[in-house]
Image: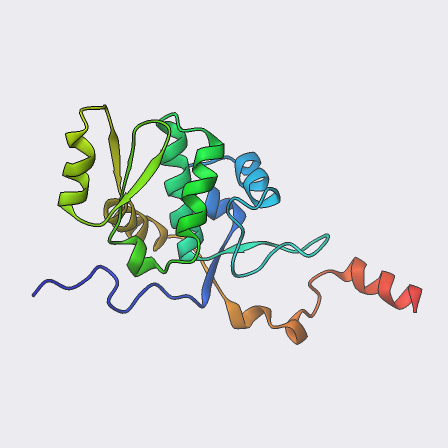
Length: 174
């Protein structure tokens, strides 16, 4: 019996800073920042909270960033990508690992089986597919060589020295 790629699952207690998320996903900081501001892909571990704070993206967030990048590269509009991402948002990594995304250039379809892909091809129109398991495998190999940060390192009462300037301002205004 073949094991699933993530029987144990990626460590959901680990996050990746913006420069790493950008590099691994193959996107620019501007793209990442725009996608976060417009709620396309938000960092699920830690959002920016004022000056000096760092966003942390989970493994799944980086996976979705890579999927968005691939869809953009194939010419799908950001508006249609938003619709696709909405349906992916609440899924776990293991659910995503079973999907092949197929598009005719306008609509993005989720296929879970070869038969579903064949049905889309039977229509005779040109389509292209994005095999999420392949992206997942590539990401797993790539991201493991980058530094990550554990969630417990950032508990609310453990933000000693996170932003000295903010602490001074708070004391001054009290």
